Length: 544
Image (cartoon, rainbow, N blue to C red; front, top):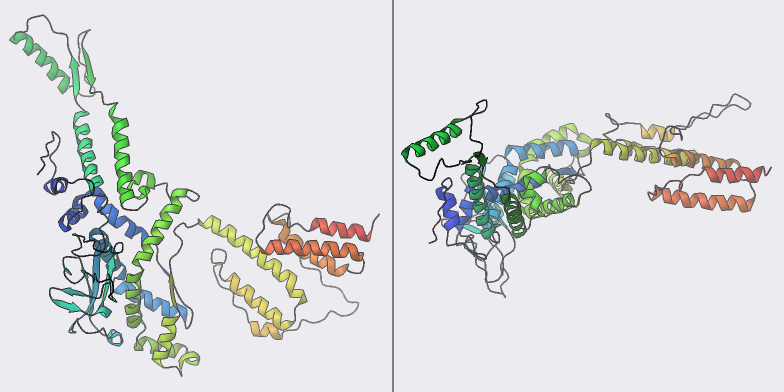
């Protein structure tokens, strides 16, 4: 057993046990106990496990149920999700799987045999609880089948806790990394996943040495060095007493005090300016080695740099977003396990009766099972993008889309019959209601009434209604091409017989090409401006 001796503050027993566990060398494998100590006491050990899980759960999933009364069905699901603390259990299971390499969660119903299949139809009124197990709890049941010809080769089939078997419908097993053939992990007590500490064990030990160095530097930073000229070649007790008195005066002096020293005496602090370069580089390399061993971005472990890591446009931000996406994929089986349980508890028969009362036309003749399966099959849960744009940028994007919608309406509405006008208006309404950043209240128009509406024709010789002013002109919009496209179309309709055919065909083809580029999102300056085409047409009509 190696010996550790320091002249700094004493290292606690648990950290000392990490440092001295088996004379850790590169390539050593952590045991179950070492993994537990690393998570409990190591400053980086906890962050390696919890930070990725917390980042994966820092945003809520977007829940969509495309069929049925979406808002009410979704709210019932989210309320039950919070009631059973699903996020906390998912995080705890993912945490233990990263610490030891494997973990499991089981749904327990009070009064039911855990070995029997879970009856989801009875979950509504059942007393439900969840238990999260680490490898020691399920030891012996997750060894995995090592027969290459077996159907369940290197697959988990179920768990047993202290001899009590759990049916697979009640449990979900999560491994950190996939198992390797004949690769036994002592932390997981089987041929299963690997701990996040396995490749980083030696680097984690080195990090504790850097903490000891920090402590030693802190202790020595306040040491004063008094350089005093000896009074003579022979030092007797009087001289020693005088020198000691000088040292005590220097030691007791504080801010605001004045002390006197000899002309050839000097008082200095310890010179540690050469420590920063080598020690700083070593500590940085240790953190990068730990991150590399755990297959995670180093920014996550280095909090000082991580504060700027999520700025848009930085490559570090993309790497972190990709890492969080992988973490969410790893945790997806746990979410699907809870999704099914929450659906049966939230969308129960009592809830369906309220839906039938509120929506009799849609559900009065539909039985509960049919409606439930319809909601379950249309259930979609997606994660939002980790790199969110600020609200100011979202408003700019919505503004550009809004101008495009208005331009499309200006082009198509004059040429459509009432029924297709109503369809275009419904499409416009649906798109406008998606812009919550621009409009606080949704637009609700009577589309059927609009389809039947026929505007009155103006009387012959009567006053003509003034043409409506374009909603966006070149003076009040950065997107000038949106304002000139409709003007160009109107110009062609009004002057089709006046412009020579060759010129008319040329500017029409050019205008169609620019319109296609516009719909494809081309935003280069001048490409989508139709004013030059209108000018060519006007010159063709009046060459002089």
